Image (cartoon, rainbow, N blue to C red; front, top):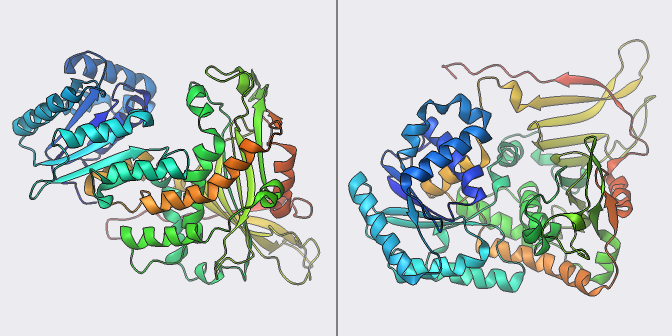
Length: 512
């Protein structure tokens, strides 16, 4: 992969969990792999008063404690943190930005780094506008000849269409759209990126990837954990805003988009927007019939008793915020007309699972004893987590006399590639941002199209007046959501998978 040009990465809100748990470990992974720029510095800006040396010592200790992988590769931690400078900084202070500018100029000069800066918004979303204004007022946003300015923005990208538009306008007042990187860590996962390769590099899949052969598509992102320490954030978000509006809609777009004219950021993102524009709008009757929410109550997860959502820290005792969403919707275009799509997402579910399931239409006639008659007899499963991989389910003859049929599975797991370590999602996306490749980042028009689809659902729930249904922690969701899954799962007539065929890929040689 191309090594990025020399640059400085400025992280706002660097004393928070995001920097500690995601950004610094991801940057260290890039450092170990030799993928960071040859001339590179990280300026961590946060309110907490401490020296660069104190910040380095604290973060090294935290990274060793958090990650076994880091502990196994700890010999170069000191060398890596030599790239890190800490700058005490008050986001709300206008003078602070001028002092930050001077610090960046000092670091650039001492390290002989070109005039390229990437700003990372690791602070709470409420202060994004203040940061953008501060960057502009102190002159840091001005793009010099031969230099670059980019900004990486964490979700949520607004809380509705109006706020998303306001955020987009604020960002564009300081940065060109091509220099704004709205990050969704799901798109850094290997299986997600593999969707487009699987579809557009194989003649055996793309001819079938349409309404003539596909019965339904289901996308699931379930977690066994609750809101943990994010109760106050979740109170203002909920599962629909936190998961559906960004993660699941983006996964859906990758599954359903047309083949781009070229595999570059503009062409890929143009096709994503076309899909989002084709989503069938939902009226009140559609929402009542096809969109279901829920909130977890106390229960048992993994043999451990856990509290309900309303008993979590930072959560209102009478909260009506949803922690679970199940929905059915349609894409009104030539490829997908009439094919139902399903989303399932929730916290405190029975298992941790993120996957995309393509249910192909069943055979028109039943010739064989034991032949599956369900809608999910032929199924392609793209597993995002855990155990990233691909599985194809189909019917096969049982060995022996006669023509007894059974369902089998042909599986590929990324873990079978013993010589390849999957990169962390943040590591992949940080590298792309530093290289200026925006293919896996959301564009402003895609964000706004997503909110156009989501806002009517939020408005209906706000005004419907009914109490939110509950589901026990450790279950599969609400009664309505589980019933919705029966529509496409084929649970009533599909047979158990008795055999498994494993795809073993040869290890790559130096000649390949």
